[in-house]
Image (cartoon, rainbow, N blue to C red; front, side, top):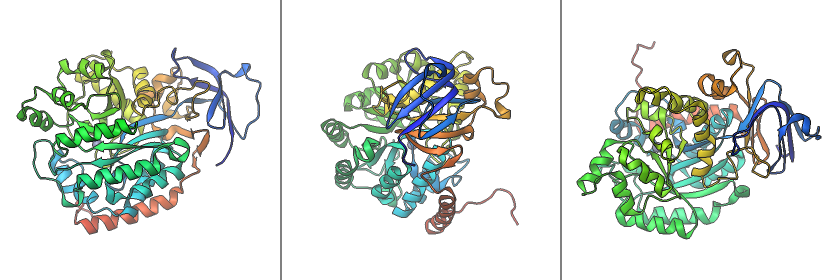
Length: 464
Ligand SMILES: [Zn+2]
């Protein structure tokens, strides 16, 4: 896959630049890691490159950025459907993940990335890597797959979840000293690795699992190392009960007192904020990863995304995990993000197709701390982009490509994916991951994991 230049001519190009320019007959030319040209095809003299793509009938746009991913959950896709969130964690997800081996962790990461690349995601934030998943194996898999990633090691020092004390499955429990030691070691080893494609972050688990002292220690460490943090906040009402029991008015009151509202923090879900808390999120410059499919499936509620956007909160989109979504397809996630709030607030004007694309590109770049480097097609920026085949029966007539992309599209219409100037998928063929082998190994490992953990998938209908 080693090539130094990529050229696409005659494509419909969504630049996502400051003015949101669209070129109806546009060209993109990249050299090495950088974008060298974005503009009308007829103004570009270059006709040759290592990879030349005929852009007719195709749309080129910045790669999608998934800001809340559990890589380890790809292997347990479909293992916990139609159950309540705490049971979903306690009886299925934690039990399965708490029986992972490092090889399971690596295969799950490969499976997840194969799906992400195939469906147009170029960069992602993995929010919680348990030491049993094998951080090194996952980082090596990211390096080989060619994606851009923030890998967050789990940080915890208690076995609770929101206001439910001591409910975590023993295999998921980690000790504070161990968490910090491993994160710091992985940071030293992997942060900035793979030509700066890999970042190492702190993944504060959730309320109830991290003590006040540990929150404060990690904030200092992240600042010291000039890296970032992510955590689940306000995914469940139990989080609100938890902070109220401790005498705080609401989630932001608590988060602010801990120093958690800061520009290097990505808050996942962020559902249970009151209206009056939304401007506070904007004021502190923290980021929210909105996960609509997961929130619908687990009946967690509706994040106040229209209000967040109105107040200028930095919102991005996350697919969450295999048992909560159950896909890692950001196109489908954009569609949900654009649909669900219309009904939730009874207003068809909120969260437009354009805003959904902004969240999935520019919002993701901001959350990753890569604003101005990825998330738009601008000369000098990193060459992370995707080519979508718009000549599909489900996208005809293609009179409004932006609408089609969000409301009628799906990730499987993506045919070429480029990260850092390297082609990871070319015309539907994955070049950095052996898809057949990943599918075989994932099937095998999933069967063994279910046996080992004693979790049974019982079909609701008779199977003979
Ligand atoms: Zn999550």
